[in-house]
Image (cartoon, rainbow, N blue to C red; front, side, top):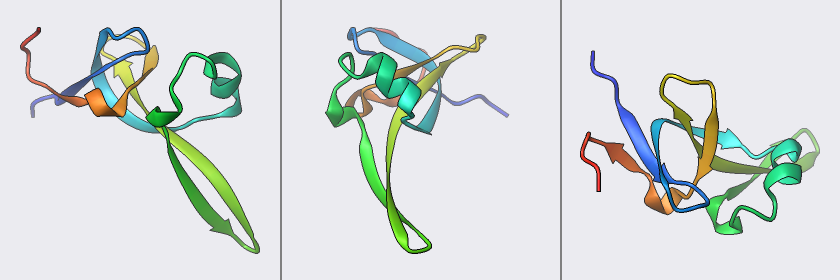
Length: 86
């Protein structure tokens, strides 16, 4: 079976390559990245839990191949990586 990798541009406009994950934007991320990331990069979803509604924020990260690090990417730039570079 073949690996399917993706690419997307980070906050500096550089390409990141690896595995694509839709991830919840946490309080930790907000504290460390709030001024660095564009609000347009995230999706907002309301989830009903018992009698209350909870707002959850999601974004997309590229998990770099061969490492344990990941980086938030602009969803408008995400695409399947086929091996060709600009």
